Image (tube, rainbow, N blue to C red):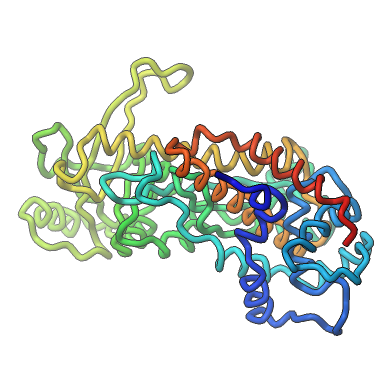
Length: 407
């Protein structure tokens, strides 16, 4: 059973406790500059989060809605009055870009439990990596910091921030993210996430994330991988397995000498140990989707996995695990369509505030998906059956209902 406190702005205080914000503020060295100020860093942080619950409202209106709930949770001094829009802007500048990233790092832990449906592959947590871009206001500062898509007459109307995130497939909760300018590719940003994988996890990824270096980095963590192979990747057959899948070897493309490549292929066939900087044994699972509509009809899907033994995951389990990757598309949709609104531009006209806004966005999505996952577990249903939009509306209504309490 979910209590009213959990579905008010309290969902933010519950998922993002005051201690986590205070510790992040201390770590970033941006403590309050004067005692008794009505916008100390922790209040500014909660207001920044609250802006994502009410993206259509101006600063002052968000403050009026949020401060009543903050009072109930001991995060607001009853002697303060709601801040003005200019006061919030100045407070956000003082908070800077690093604090909310640090808060996310401290609160975004594993949401799925062993009883969460759709979250696991043979006892290993299913994760997905994916990216998206976000429009920010067209200011000189944002343009210089982030850049545009395209150039000349085909240049995008707004500067864009690129985000690559790691999400739990079962709960849609974002667990880690990298934020950069548009010129920084998804494959490059992903490297900061791959090194964070754990042995009890399985990472799914589309073919756009594959490179030999990225595979080496991710596999080196001990996590299992299920990635779609890019078109044209050479996959020589080392051994055909009983289930119709086969073992191949991925060879570092920097090794161009035919003799050395032939020697690595022979070593793989002989079962010799391979230097991971030079080559990797992987299992290949191939299939098509005969009833698939659109351009993908009849397309052969080629998956690469570190799970070499079919006894550890059958071919159909590997394929099903890969298709759970699309759950991150749902997470992205929660951000871009429901929290922000389709086609909308972020508020922040300065780069530091735009990055701060991105991290706040990710934190709010995490808080809501964690609430949904806990409610789904209590009801013994798949989190997919608990509507994100309905939960968001309930949170907004509850927050608005507490706004009449004088701060």
